[in-house]
Image (cartoon, rainbow, N blue to C red; front, top):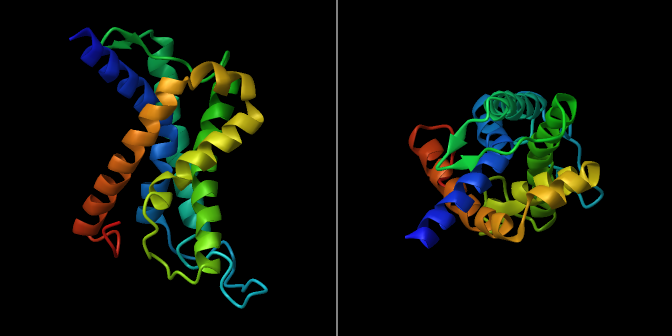
Length: 192
């Protein structure tokens, strides 16, 4: 029973730490549209740089959502709220650092998705074409890389091996579930 509780606690911590990275992509899909980030330009290979699916409005909405979620988390962590006897960790030693960490997680998740979109265009995959597992983790790696580059000490101290493994297992499941819901309600054109 203790092992199950321990696994649940690790999963809760993993989701808690990734919430600022989990929100931006679905919110960008819901509120995106408008002027594309690549301004319709082609790369030297004759294909779009990113495509119409990556817009300024989606980028702004996504980062804003991650920041709002993170600000709620900062407030909860400062009140020393626990879930399943877990002290919810803060996102930095002070409020400014915590907000910057949350920004890195949010922006990094969208950057990771954009980088993969760039490579999908190079592979001649159309917008929305599936790339299993990569589609479900590109935003995770983007969030991790940007956060690590800006806040390496916090990242190393916070993302233990067990937390990383939990995120790598949980994220694809959440991603597919959210995409199916988005497809059912008409926000996404494909269920992956």
